[in-house]
Image (cartoon, rainbow, N blue to C red; front, side):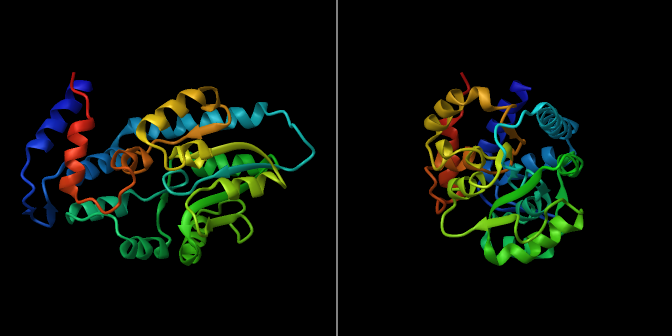
Length: 265
């Protein structure tokens, strides 16, 4: 597995950045461009990805079953949406196949349709938790103008608590800490579900690569207990932290950073 990864990285690094079109597929030869294709392929077609999702939700179910209440407040689960409940790999793959990256306009068009699939095991787990009297809060960094399409998508699968009171979108800041604390003031939060570490704690908000690694070690006992992590090889702070959260870098600039960061020996 490790050998295959290294070969893939060196092959992509050697490619020209000149855009190449084959049929309806257009690539620019960059690590980041081709990497999105590779990652979405894993998300869509790898049985291992599906197994990891089932594993995460199975652990979450065990935690629900064994949970002992700490207060008289009603119990709740706080979950992210994208790549935690909803699978947006078709959007990411579509952009990559055109040799393009994420942009707000096409993303908003995608979310407005409300047609994203769900992650394996997500619907079953959330409905199970709800059957135990647990309230589900969907805390997302989708913004307010995406609310209608997001609600449509959640309700498409009859997800519990898919309503105005429990869908909490981003307002002014991307950090979810204030929103988590607001829920915690009225509910006892049993579990957090997410694909990005900032879904769980402010310890991970806009932190450097080294800080994220350090804080992950610090929080080791929470993973699989309070924090249930879903796999996302396509995007997230694991990538943008490499670029110091500079969203204006070109793909060539990103490639240069990746070559410096990857370890081959």
